[in-house]
Length: 319
Image (cartoon, rainbow, N blue to C red; front, side, top):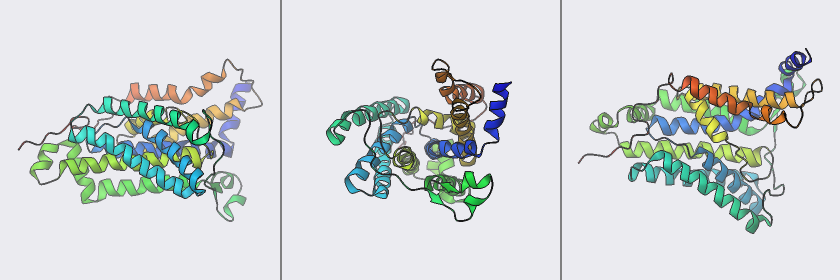
């Protein structure tokens, strides 16, 4: 009964919903990145590595400049650079996209771990370098319940939802979006109509780097103000699951990200509940909830969520 009471208290606590939004924010950005890349036909499992590299870059440049927004800008540039490597290998050289993505993840893990000590003087975790301040909406914070959820949030949260609206409009309401979807479904037919298949695919992958770069910046200077090794913690893979569950649609990916964010918030709140005792043995089980949900989603929905027909298939132009 105490467990049921603890669960009930979680769902009536506004903090649960605020944590859901903050936990979902990097997933929304990264899953959008997956949508852009994969609807143009390029599998991008490198999102985890792009996020990690961008999180590190944002902290480095915030540390050097003393300005968090310079850190955010450099995180985006880092995401563009890393995604360009993936695009170059996948599109120009028709490389195996999964292998390339895996290599980029390993490179990001190695580079960030190696550079910690030369730049910050110690391994593992940096000192606090600065954090993007939360936006406080005048008057809203005083509204019962809802004020505690929406009254004071990171600008990244609002940016993530704006990115979803922009992406939906771009993909489904513009000529560019139509071309992106055409290239992902049938690049040969798109090519015969005069569409630059390689150019569209480069655009999709590079945009995935922009969104994943913002996701990485949020994890470091948007949320905690420092960097620690492997701080992405598998969120890039969870974002891919959100993309699949969302059927490669920006709005669907956002809703799936909120579901994963809610699972993370639920685990967090249950562990801190005063009604139940979570032992050190049981705690890892709560931490695994988002990943267990990921496995269930991928196993249950991967067959029902149809990927673009040319997703993962390199295109070679016939002269």
